[in-house]
Structures are given as structure tokens and as C-alpha cells.
Amino acid sequence: MSLGSVDPEMARAIASEIERQQTSLELIASENFASCAVLEAMGTPLTNKYAEGYPGRRYYGGCEYIDVVESLAIERAERLFGADHANVQPHSGSSANMAAYFAVLEPGDTILGMELSHGGHLTHGSEVNFSGQFFKFVRYGVGEQDQRIDFDQVRELARAHRPKLIQCGYTAYPRTIDFRSFGEIAREVDAILFADIAHIAGLVVAGVHPTPVGHAQIVTTTTHKTLRGPRGGLILCDAKYAPAIDRAVFPFSQGGPLEHVIAAKAVALEEASRPEFKEYAQQIVRNARAMAEAVAERGFRLVSGGTDNHLFVIDFRDRELSGLKAQRRLDRAGITTSKSTVPGERRSPWVTSGLRVGTPAITTRGMREEEMRQIAGWLADVLENLEDEELAARIREQVCELCLRFPLPYPVLA
Ligand code: DSN
Image (cartoon, rainbow, N blue to C red; front, side, top):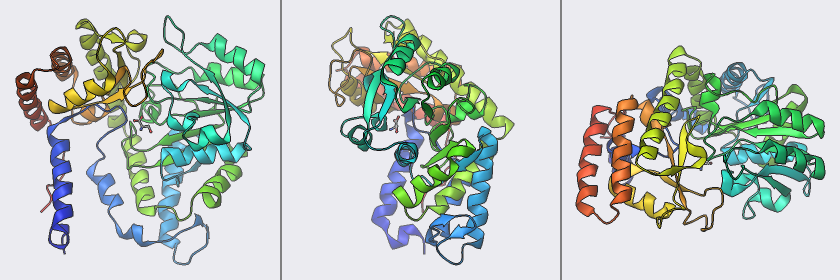
């Protein structure tokens, strides 16, 4: 029986969300639209199977086909990223990061990581997260003038604190990450280098951003951002760390793997190995640059002055406006964004002084530079006329028309 006849209430909620995705502009830098092939793999009876353990070493019977599924995902991840070893079981980026830390650290060990308000993630040592509660974080940040990572400071702090692990890779950093320099500093102080490339993984496999593999011994990523797969995580590491990483995922922090999601990860990894994915990733970056330039031309200040990757961050510290208010006003116009802290932040992480804008999802729809300039104009119009409801409604209609010109290939629920 179809979902609509078994549970019409749920079918309606899902249909409404599909319609929202169809008719609004998704500018959240961490979101994307998975392909129908990815969704098909995820919605399979693989969800019925318990498979604790790893291919060839399971705690349950009947895993012969599940082993094929997970082995395909592992091989594809290793090949695509050029890594010695991949663990594809983490349920999320946070689970992947938890396993990465506990694979090589003891509680109380020191980690050198990015100042969170400069673009770091919750799992990079927030005091309300396990990472900040189990480990001692020392912070580097971006330079005051150029708002790019200050490697002199990273080196100085590494020498002074001798961290066991150095963390790099961020959620709101618009510039290229110099993994080579991080690797050199880590080697100098005998630290493990850990790169969280959740945001840029798709750019990395497409060769549009340098890879951390070869510099960082442990790399984590989500699979649903620029990589455009199902919601989930994975870990890559040097051969030396493979047994510790595998143990830290199962049995240390997770039980049964989500094999339907692992199948979908494998499909996404296959898609990401194709030439058209490279073109897609290049277009993401061209689009981000075009939109960032158009927003800056309207007088908005951008963190670091622009972007090298898939996102840019608007800094409202020279205005009354907060990130929260900007996000809410843009929602009314069908433009979906996420507020963001900025370097030098004075507001709370709930309110913030910045807005993060990303192009992975709208690039998946096929939009290009011309549409970016159009969207930047709407975004600036809304932010300059916060109380103008009529303008927001007019832009909402235009947004809808634009989205329908670049439809998502998702079937409508019956
Ligand atoms: N929540 C994600 C983001 O928006 O960047 C990170 O996990």
C-alpha cells in the first residue's frame, strides 16, 4: 500500500516539504538535492537488516549481500579520495568526528582547533558538545585584517601547547584551506592532523579544492553537502589508524550500521566520480563568486572580502541587522539561508551578526551566473527593505517562477 493510503497525514507533510524544496531558493551552504538514484537506494529494504561489524566480520547471519553493499561504498570512497582506508558507517558528521577523536585521544588531551565564531563546528570543541567536554581545546583563528587563517598563530600555539591533535576544516570559512601548511606544522610538533571536510568534500573530489589526504592522517566528511549524497558521514584515514578508527565507530560509538544509507552513499560516490560532477563542482564555485560579487556591489561587507569555495558570509556588524533577522526576512521571500557567527562576533550564536550563503543546492538545479546575479539582487532588496511586506511577496512570486524554470526531478507523492 502506498504511503498516502497508510498514513495520509505523514504523506501530506512530506508532500509539503517537497513543494517547499521545489519552490524556494535553497542557499543553506550545507544542503543539497540528492539524485533520484540516491533516494531510490536509500528507500530500500536494506533498512531491515542488522549488520553489526564490518564486511566479512559480522555479528549476524545473512549479511552476504549487505557485505557487497558496504564493500562497494568502502572501495568507492577509498578510490575517490585516494585514501588508504574508509569507514562508511558513521550516521552523521558528528558521529564521524566523535569516532575520529576517540580513535586517537584520551579524555583530557589537548586539541588545537579553530575559534568557533570564526567558522568552526559544534564538534570542534563547543562547550555544550561532547568535544568541548572531553577534550581541552586551544584556539587559533583568522587574522584581523584579511580574515584568513593565521598560520603564524597556528604554529606559535602548536609549539607552545604541543597538542596531540590539530583540527582543520570548517563550516563557515569561505577561503581555500592550506592543508599542506597544517601538515607541516603538525609534523613539527608531532601532532596528528585531523581534517573535517564536511563542507568541501565534493569540491575536493572534483579537484576544485586541494585535498587533505596525504597531509591529514584522519579526514571526516558528511555525505550530503557538496558531495550530494544521503544524510550521513564517513571517515578516511591512513592505514596505520584504520583499526583504531573502525573500533571507534563500532563497537565504541555506534551499533548497527544503516545499510540502506550506506548503499545510497555508494551511489553518490559513484556519481561523484563522473566527469559531470567535476563540472558541477566548478560551477558551484563560479556561482558562489558571482553571487558574492553582486552582493558586495550592493554595499554588503563579506567576511574575508569574498570566496574561493561554495559559500560566502555577509558580515552585518556595520549595520543594525542581525543574522537571525536577515534569515527570517529572507524566508518570507522564499530565500532560505542560515545565520552565522562572524570573526569578532558580539552577539549570541542564536542571534549572530552574519549570514552564510551557499550555492551547492541551486547549482544542482542547473542555475548559473545569470541567476546568481538575479538572486543577489533579491537578497539585497529584502535586506535593505526589511519591513516591506509587499516587496517580499513580489520577490516570493519571482523566486517561485525561477524555481519552476529549474525544477527538481522528484516525483510528486500520490
Ligand atoms: N549543520 C551543518 C552546517 O550547516 O554547516 C554542519 O554540520
